[in-house]
Image (cartoon, rainbow, N blue to C red; front, top):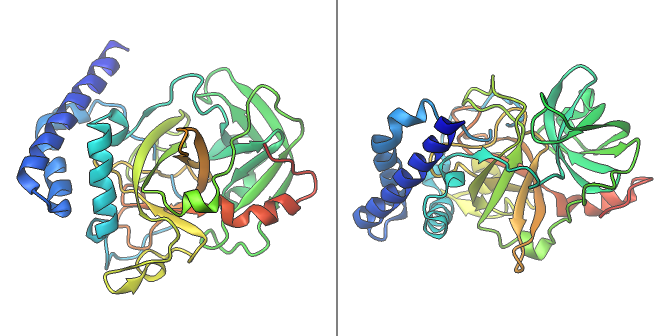
Amino acid sequence: MARHNTTELYDHQAARAAIAAAEREAGSDDAKFIEAINRHYHRTAGPQLRTATASVTAHAGVTPAAASFHIYLDPRFLRNARELARRTQGNTRVIGGTEVPPGQFPDCVAVGSDAQWGCTGTLIGPNVVVTAGHCADFATRVFFGNDVTKTGTIVGVKKRFRHPKYHKGKHNDLLILLLKESVGTVPPRKIATKTLADKITDGRVVGFGHTDPSGTFGYGIKRQVDVPIASPRCAGKVNGHDDSVSYGCDRGLEIVAGRPLLARDSCNGDSGGPLYIQDTNHKWLIAGATSRATDSAVNNCGDGGIYLRVDAYLSWIKSIPGVKLG
């Protein structure tokens, strides 16, 4: 435990020094700033990173296409990433994720079958969990707690409702779980409005997912990471192409976010988990649900992700029999 605390402190100091060095070196060039912060940070903290707790990381496990465009070429991402670095000044969440402290984000749950856990979700009503559509085949129970290997509360799933236009984890990747009983001890997370979600420049991803870039190990502990936004609605243009072409997102229905400043991202097992944003009163709201890696990603995890916008599906969610939102 002592080594874990020391490593996080060392990472924080290294990140602050890297931010300062990058600001001096890059001037007004956001791309140079992001390159420089990674270079300076890994030069200083590289040996420690091999023992540090890895980031929150999970997508659908979709095999990525060959990269013709990378999120590091998107000026919107670069601008938002630099602003996030300036505002947080090297907080460990920017470095690549930390374990969620007890009591924070209790609405973020693990989702799994009777035999194992494999996805993440969010309680949005006393008996309603939102998660990814591609998790439907094994979503029979949810876990409230911070570590699936330790004590927590398990609640069974009564009914599953996958979006009627769901298609292979790439379109309308949404699943609503009605629980067998209401959860009175955990406040449901409120959903961000369209107006607020349209303006986001960064958010916080929380999930139980794997912690390596290949998405193969580390599932089970609730972690968090702050990510810059590239496209809040998949409705812009970059590199001369629509976001839907550059990233493989659905126009008006999804968010493109990450890759975070130091190569940590959501990964396998975080699927369905929340992308939180803050309102003007600094209250966390759910804006997105983790779906998959971008089409341009080289790695399964760590090269940016696509998040379904919950507000875009609110009418359908409310139409489900038995759904009562928080």
